[in-house]
Amino acid sequence: MSARLWFSSPTQCMRGGGKLCAHTLAILAALLLGAWVPRPPHLQIHSIGIIAAVGDTCMFEHVSNRTFQWIGAPEASFLEISDWGIDDEVTKTIAAALAPAYRTQSIAIEHQDFDTWTYDSLRRRIRELPVPETPVDAYLLILRNWRGDDIGGSVHQLGGLGFYRRDFSGGSKRYGVFASYRLMLLEPQRGGIIASRAALQPNGRLPWLPISPALWPRTQNDLSVAQRETLHHDFLHLLDTTLPTALRKLGLRVAD
Image (cartoon, rainbow, N blue to C red):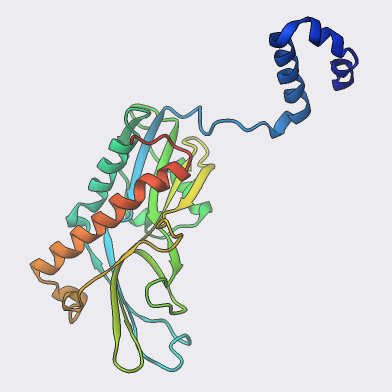
């Protein structure tokens, strides 16, 4: 029935009383709005497979005080930290945040397959994954993400979990730890992207914390036990405090 027919007899709506009129108007609104009527997000998702691939390496980035520091890459090195168990902790945090709205399970992966990625490579990796013993409606991935330098304001980018140092003219320095990561929901069969969001602070900037200069090691392999424990704690703090908001922005229902 067309919209014109509904409007052609307003007295019928009046005779039917308020309930009929409201019902008529609701149907009319649906006819007029059509595809514009918003739907609640991800109602088809009830079970989720969590793929955590953010916590197996730590980046050490040093932006030195050079007149043309933007010409070359900063001093950067990486430390393998898979033994810190950060991805396991992240998986537990996500599972707790999504319960009881979703059934979740951890998905075993080869981390090197997700250390660097493009959207095309992610689709391929997802299609190549073995089918879980308990099938899922979607995969939730937590991955390294590259963002601009919100700590020292250089032209360089920061990715994953890392320790940062920026040298300024006059001898001042700025130190911080950061967690630059992205959450993605992917279809389990084709690897299509359902939703993708970068994790950010409430001000829309990179998640990071200022840190003591005493933590900066001579090389990434010279971390003391105390330094490792401090970095481990700060990385988990950044992840724990930014994950709930990132999950909500992805369109998932999160426990309060």
